[in-house]
Image (tube, rainbow, N blue to C red; front, top):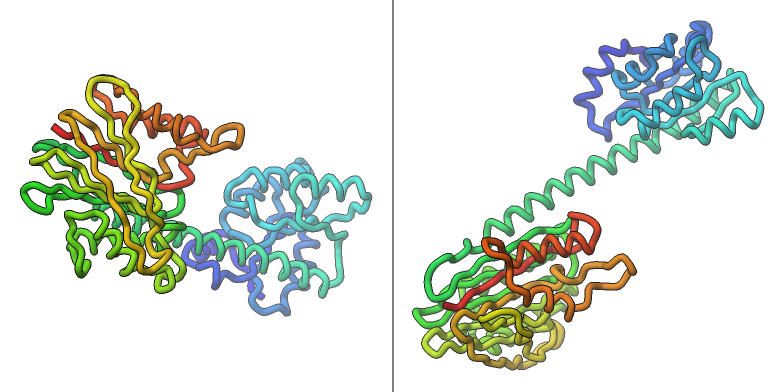
Length: 399
């Protein structure tokens, strides 16, 4: 056991990882004799750092400096109520989760109940047997250090997820603001990394491909699969598939990414090819929400573009069908994942697709994007800026 100065403890704790953090005891008691007694109890124990604060007015400052793994707190002290200190520990960020063991001469049940109500983790009538004190110190410190390790692991995971989300976004194509078809998009990841990805580009001078896919689940695994599929489509590296024929593309994807070889993962996709010379859009979907094609000239029911096919990777050997539609000049096409409309309403229901489509059919005010309006509405319905799933949508305007 070592007895460190609080200032030294502050410097050391700043570089100690949770997994190597020593058991650090802070005793707050106005009686030096009690401090000496507790020090003697802990002295034979290896790996325990002991700090003593005999001025209760400095308890919070000292605890913040030494970063204890357990606080031993007296109740009866001049000028400061120990129960009030327990409350202040729980109100202070640096000590909010630190275990507090009340060490007091008071034995009445009402005092014990009040201590626990204020946030104490344990209550010992002082002075306890040495073995009991050591056991409780180690027990509470072990739980707190484990909490710190979990928090650090979570922080690292969230940082990695954010990095992965940024990588996925860096692969998405830039908006297109000139030419026969202009394209814009909105892509926001949820609190946990999802599996949305999309792309578009001219296959040749007359054929434009547009696609959006959504891998089941969340996390790095879903993102890696979505990036792999996106790269396969972008490089047109599916054997035997003519990328101007959506049905062939989805059939080839179904063979290339069976669930059995993807740890049970699957994805949905909407894939369309616009032939500029004939103003024809051929499209196919694999279990994906219908895209919405809106004619020019004001609000009107959108044409829902969804060929009836299964999700990708579910049943090998399936042939995916496609459909086609004429695209009048000035039409708008919205392609999206289910995260843009599967928003929980206050009554616990999910925003109906019909209501979502009706919202999207309305023209955007001058100088604004309907996609931005949709994001605002989804957040309003969800009651939070943090949506439960990726928000992925692209808009193509056919001139």
